[in-house]
Structure formats: structure tokens, C-alpha cells
Length: 238
Figure (cartoon, rainbow, N blue to C red):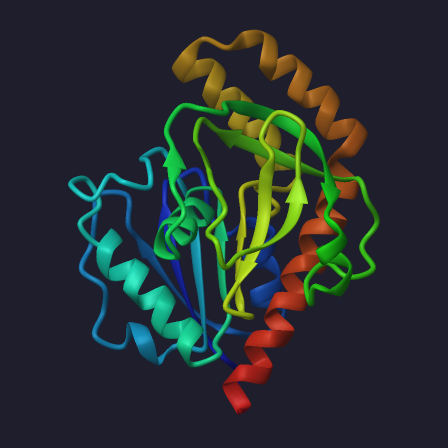
């Protein structure tokens, strides 16, 4: 039977993207919760085989806006304790850092655009990153950053925002970068940013970055997604 995956989406413009594409290709049974305004997690949340926490405009300490955050952190730890894979992207990575004792620094590392990322030595033995070509390019849109939890294995680094990827508990991954974003999403986010924030210059430069690096970023995102889904499938039959 296809694995069950629980996805928490924290903004309408930030769906699972390439990860969702790969989940659909593998006929995973996906439940997506629209969590931007805060939700009550379903009673069967812990019964899924994989957990995905996506990005959003709130910060990782915004428990008032998102009342589910404390319960979600505990849910992630429950998945880890039972060997079931967790994947956090952007805000999701910051929440996972918080869940394992790391500090999130608000407004400390703003980035918007396609950024090259380097691998740490530990990435060579990582189930999601081993053998990948580096530098890898990925979309960024965030203001905050985090300190790695003491128990974390560092995996990816960037120039302006150092901590870009980590693993904890053997089966939990956090990626600051938006590795789920395809070229269409990159351009759509730039248009959204222009319309909401008046950032017209970046709309033009993002289109150039998407043309130059978007295909490679998509390959990287799909590869990570497929490797993570392999682990979810293994956990579902264990």
C-alpha cells in the first residue's frame, strides 16, 4: 500500500511544488493541511508514514498565530522516535531546529533569489545528498535563520545564510532553501513580491536567475524529494 504523508502548508503561494509532483508520481496518499491561520492537528496525525512542514510568512516562534506549532514540534519528535522521515523547508527547517533545541534568529539573514549552496563533508554520507553535484542552486525567500541544534549534522551551507541544511535523529531533515520551488514558482514569487512589496528590480533579476539556474535547481529538488520518498516507503513497510 502507498505510504501516507502529512503535509502542513503555511502559505497559499508555497505548496509542496516539486515534492508534491514526486509524491503524485509515486501515488503517495497525501493529506495537505492549510495551516496559515493555525489549526488543530488531526487525531491521526501520528499515524502517517512521513511528515512535511512547508514555509510561511510567520516566524518559528509565532505560537499565537499558529497555535499548532507546539503540538507540531512534538509530532516531529514522535516521528523521529519511531524512525519515520520528516522534511522541513524554510519555516519548516526553523521549526525543526527549534524542536531539537536550536535558536531561531528573527530577521538576521534575509535572502531572496537563487543561491549556490555548498555541501559539508558530512553530506557525502547523507541519504538525501550523497553523490549530488555541488554547488547546488536553490531558491531562497526568508528573513530568519537558526543555530544548529547540538545534535544536528550540518549538510548544506551558504554565503549569506550559513545554515542551509541539517539532519537530526537519523531521519529528520531541515532545509532553509526552497528546494521544492520550480522555475514557475521562482517567477511567481518574484511577481508576488513586486506586487506586495514593490520590489520590481528583483522580479527582473529572478527571471534571469531562473533561466540560468532553474533547470539545475529542479533536478536537485526532484532528486532530494525522490530520495526522501524512498525512505518514507521503507518506513511504511517496516
